[in-house]
Length: 235
Image 1 (spheres, rainbow, N blue to C red):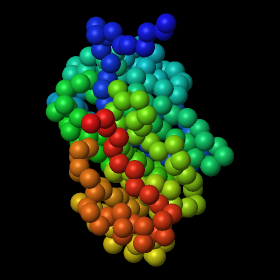
Image 2 (cartoon, helix red, strand yellow):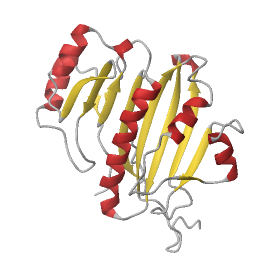
Image 3 (cartoon, rainbow, N blue to C red):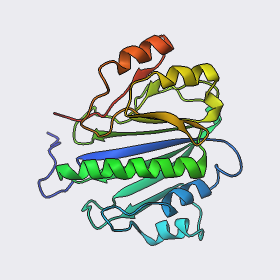
């Protein structure tokens, strides 16, 4: 009989904060530079810097080698790596996808720190990379079926996504004056023009929920075509 129980001695991350940046295909953003920009611009976490997880990761970051993934370590995280960045192409939609996964190792108060770190990094990379779309969310990795990214998310270059996540950035290519007016009516802690696009911070922390009227206003404004997808954590 197969034993699926995880050994008590094996330390697994319990939660993660994930960021996604959808970048339009062109010579600048489909190269390794998007990955390097994300790695080189990492803010300090708890006053300490992230370090390359291996020589290979360092070579990619420092332009000595090509790659689509880098892993970074941090003193506060016991898992083999603290942060993983992956760049993968989605040519059918005309976009490249840069994913950033920040892992949490089981200390409850760290998740709020990582949430704020992710929020800061998302805003920084929106300014540096000018994505068509950017999202941030968190999930419980220990709970089977908990995902930070909705499997049915439809992202493209010419229409609004099918979901809004806790932090959502919409690039100027997705916005019309009518869309901006609809977005401005949504009830959120931050909901504003940002970097020529639009930024929504629907909740301020992973344990929070949107304003009670947020989803009803969202459904009315966009006729049910856009849903909200929040943090997925086991209770």
